[in-house]
Image 1 (cartoon, one colour):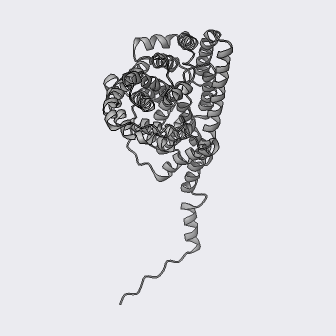
Image 2: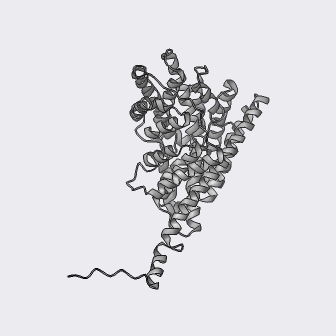
Image 3: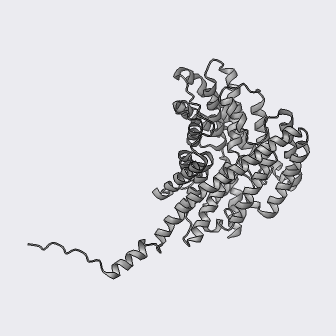
Length: 439
């Protein structure tokens, strides 16, 4: 008869070994603390950044109302100043911020000294607020992604643990979750856009970081819905008619925007090379376009949030809003100053939906506008799942989910037909070169 195996004794040596592998001084424990502390910090910083950007936007709106024609002078001059400061102080802060995070995944540790360094993201935050204060058609969501990835890098450096690629992805996605108050959208953005070029296993801890950042931002900002509780819905027979049109029109328009931005990259086309040869002059011209559109329309300044929300709730808007906002956003995006395109793209999408209302006058106005937003946003970023979840969470229109999914996938195909290269991954190539050069 075999004797039962004796119980293992908990000796002092075993306790010491356990503390080395899992205790407070272990790499595993410090990594967990870095991720969770970084997620909490992202929620707080994203909230403060949002409030600063909103205050700058409110200040500019008051300025433009009081001095109606003056932005024709001030906006181009500020564009030139912002581009000059960006090129001298933090050249890696230009543009959205999402391409930088995609490029940073190739070497996260090196990126903490360049693409997602504290110097770069601090300059990015101030310059983005300055762009909003100048009336530029920019959003804060893309910069929040870069800012969030940098916060994760700082947290890991302070706790002396290596920064891994999944954590960079989590940090960037946590920025989306905190910026829109949409944790689920942040999670899908991590999988669909930031990590789409990589094979990886996203751990439970990384997913927790995304959710925690969103929940912290929600706790600080309050439990609100970005565009308000719309609760839009559409009968299935109407959706069969509206969805293909919204998908093709929105996706093709979004693909056209992406193609134009990529074509104006230095080195991609002769127009991009000409713009790169005289960056300050080009920035001034872009600022003049933005100012001219803003002064003569009164609606294309800033993120376009107010106009988009008005169209979502059914307020009639000028038919030219969508094309005008498209032009203002394109001019801002290629000017070379820091700032994102998420929020302006939603506003352009609302303009697309407003045009579709004329085609389908008998269908629910809110639903048609939201489908236009889904189609255009999916066409720009080529992330259909993220587009659906963002619009679902920011309008509380879960009853419209099936038509939104159909619209997003049609839009993705239409956008691919117009522009084969994905916008953010195409833009990340220039930053990947900067990362390799800095190693």
